[in-house]
Image (cartoon, rainbow, N blue to C red; front, side, top):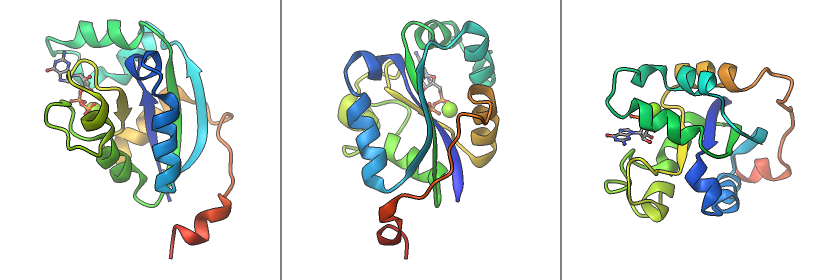
Length: 149
Ligand SMILES: Nc1nc2c(ncn2[C@@H]2O[C@H](COP(=O)(O)OP(=O)(O)O)[C@@H](O)[C@H]2O)c(=O)[nH]1
Ligand SMILES: [Mg+2]
């Protein structure tokens, strides 16, 4: 089982899409093992988006992600990293397929609703930034024998 880091961004929270997004994760059969709404500090935001520090949109990204609460999650399942990337869709909602979260609800690359780790390595790094480990729970969902062969 893989773990990935998922974050509903401030626009997703402000637009009342927490339930919709969490619902899609649940319906996919993935297991949410940690979830918390919180304000991201400037320091955490900079660590999270460190790979983009040289980009011209970096300041906008940091201002945006710290502007309003986000919902931080650790999501677990077989191929959870790729599954969540597929469900999120392309970075720019203009390119994101219908049926994806960004494709269904977004119009602008700076307001693309959700963050999902892009690799197993990124997932491990991001989970460590946002969670200590104490918040994580171990359980199985009752329906998992009907999700996995
Ligand atoms: N304003 C602006 N934001 C961008 C641009 N490219 C990426 N971003 C934002 O920066 C975030 C991180 O970029 P990236 O890691 O490449 O995309 P992701 O992994 O699909 O979220 C994206 O989700 C966007 O919110 C851009 O060209 N302009
Ligand atoms: Mg990324």
